[in-house]
Length: 76
Image (cartoon, rainbow, N blue to C red; front, side):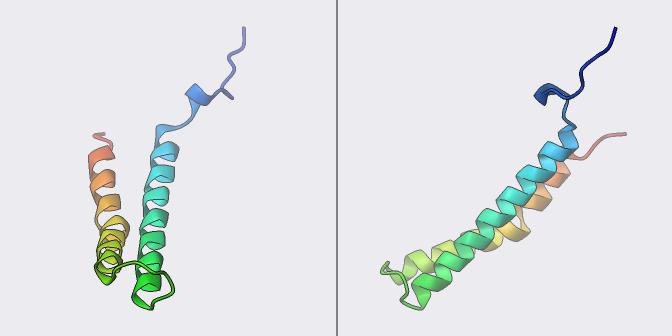
C-alpha cells in the first residue's frame, strides 16, 4: 500500500509560511513604490496618502515578517 504525498494537504507548513512572509514583504515594497510615485506626482492622489502608503510599506517589510516568524516559530 502506497501513500501519495503529492497532494496539497501534504505540503510542508514551513514552506507555506515562508511564502506568506514573502508575499507580505512584496506587498510592502509595492506600497512604498506607490507612495513614492504619489510623492513625485506620478499618481494624482493627495500627498498624505503617499506618506501613509510609505509608512505602511515599511511596516510590512520590516515589522510584520518578524512578528509572523516569531508567532510561527517551532517549539522544539
